[in-house]
Amino acid sequence: MEREFPDQRLYAVLSKNDKDILSEIFSILSDRVKANPYGDDNAYASAISQLPIGLRAMAATHHLDVSLTLDDIGWHFLNFGEPNLVKETESGLRELGLSDLADWFVEAFDIVSPLRSEIAAGGDYYECLRSHGRADRIDELTKKAREKEAGCAPDVSGSPIYDSWVRYARKHPENVFGG
Image (cartoon, rainbow, N blue to C red; front, side, top):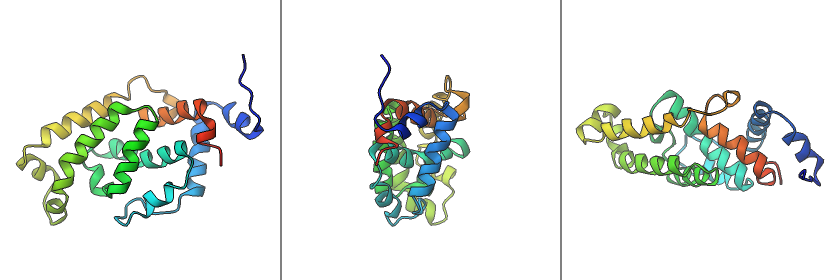
């Protein structure tokens, strides 16, 4: 039985291929979220809290995807460690069905958070992790997160996060494109 869509806009979006759905999501996020995700002022977490739950999860997890591409899971918190954004990201990962990644994310935060002030005061991130005996675990968590890329659709950059966005949008379009 075919799914009925009272809203033709939802039907039009969902009839697109994965790459185009992802582009549509990025376009919506770009239009609706103007706050700085790098700040420690809660502005980004506050701004995304106004979005539908699925879109909110996507806005919260986008920067983690970038961090995993460029750095490691721990380094993410040096750029995006504002506590409310961290909570939004964990919640977003769980909403998107990435509970294992959420668990690794929380563990990495618990490792890096107490070291942030030491690193910000001029300490080398990697040396700081090593001196506290935490470098190996951050490396393991990063490896686990990156291994999730296996089997992801190439249309979504091989990203488990972006892959989950598309799957979620197809399953719960009202939580992404509604409102």
